[in-house]
Length: 281
Image (cartoon, rainbow, N blue to C red; front, side):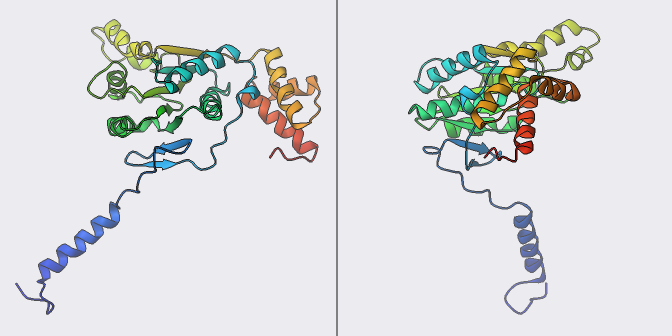
């Protein structure tokens, strides 16, 4: 094999170029953030990154979900105190504050001096969660692992993997970590997805897949807001920001959007602030 003149053969040079190309395609993962400090983190699948400017909506701003708020706060306080606590599933109507409530509870406890942090992960990272659990289990503080808007594609093995994590399998989460997920579906898995799986024993398949939601010790339902709740949400936001509103105009806003929810209420308040030439900060 011919030498290139610098001690390397053409083959060696080619191998070095390939190695350099592979390094560019697979860069070294970012160093993980210090988990002993900081209010919230994001799991990338291989490393932990601090979430800058973690400033969720204060709990007292969330109206129409008082029972859900009280139960989630109590469960989270237990976890922060090192006591037995449930994994939690928050399910129901879109825009009713499921995600905001989880984040607000974490901030409320932090403001009360509790050593607890939020870790966000996307639903497509379930296979990496055992690595995450191993990392979090080494820490002295409590963590809420939050997966927002969880759902599964047809034929996915993820529901079984998640079940294993929740019921104490080899990949189970450590005692200082509890899983909080939100879903628009009461059973997470679409019923039609389960029903089409096995034409011979469909009932067994449905029971197997829908049983996933049963693994969450605490399940909190969020339903579409009543007219009174919707107006109460707007009034709370408007009072805080010094805005006036007309109930008929607020109801027209919801009718034009085809729903009444916390999200629609907040969008109306944004509209009010814009009309008044104010910033919501």
